[in-house]
Length: 529
View: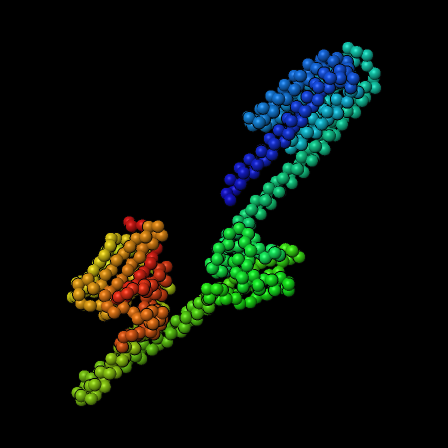
């Protein structure tokens, strides 16, 4: 979170807590005013309230109630200038309670205790701000009331001592309220900081669990799924909605869970789903009886695929090094065969040297293919405008085969994407080379089409031919290395084409068609410049 935004959020949260406390204090003020006014009207001076001047007490209580309602309205509808509103309300409280105390016979009436409540409440609501000022204001009001009483009425000197003790109590309460307010502020800030950190951790944890390639299940003691990530539904071929019973999600997993719950130990087993997926299930028992258990689901096919990719990568590096070492002596053999064919005119030896030369050329093509495979990680994607690229590509092919311009037909409009141009030349060269080899000689026998899929932000490149197509039994093998149906082929063409597509973030697929071969390249779209 932006530090400035966090500071503003903290300030807004703290200010809201101030106003909430002030609203409670306003309700308390209305309650006291209503209580004093009702008691004086119903009981007169029987409770010593207004014992000295009942009419003055009732008028002050009425005005105090009216002002309390106005203060509450201001707090609820115009929450501005907190310190100003609090100070005005506290001063009105002190003046009104002091006057009612005077009308009730002085500090002996007990109204002074409410002044102490006002000082303490103001200190806590204002988080310790101006607390000593409020205590001093209440003390001055008490001393003025006692002085006026001494000037106008008979006064026992002991009353000044009692008043002084009450004033000292005001400052004591103010200091305690200030210390408590500081403690409250510190605890509130700490709680807010911990809450923000906890919220950040929860968001990060939820993001991690949501994007995990493994499934995660939180299951309670009754076998109900409390939490799960989207990957779980994909692995178990179901849909997790709300609190679902584990049996409804996977009966086999529910049966295993019942056994694991009884053992209360960490367990890892293999489980095959209804659709045939092989999963590695790891069970983590709850930390306490009746708690929630964790179940992790790992796709063994993905793990095996990753292991195979690591092996292929290591094998690719080994074969690339071997190919580089083989290329030099292979060139020497080819050169020697050419020299022999030029010097020896014997037909038999000519035939033998031709066999040597043809096979060295085939081996050289194989070495070239292997070296090309080792360069797949050097992809440098750049912006490609489809029509401009494919027209230039077809023009180059036409230099070697005049029928290309007739047999290949472009369909669709323009598209833009990012791809390494050298890799794209290699991929299309392989696909069109196969298509030209197997398609008929009719015009438009090979169709190339680019489609922009706006919703998915992708571009699809389709290459079709009217040839015999790929046999159903061979469809799963066409992208395997060294698989070929052509006598002079190396079996690495389509394998390298798919690898180069993956290196550029694209995907090469063989689509099911009734007639002819249909290959599709799916690549992320880019903006046309």
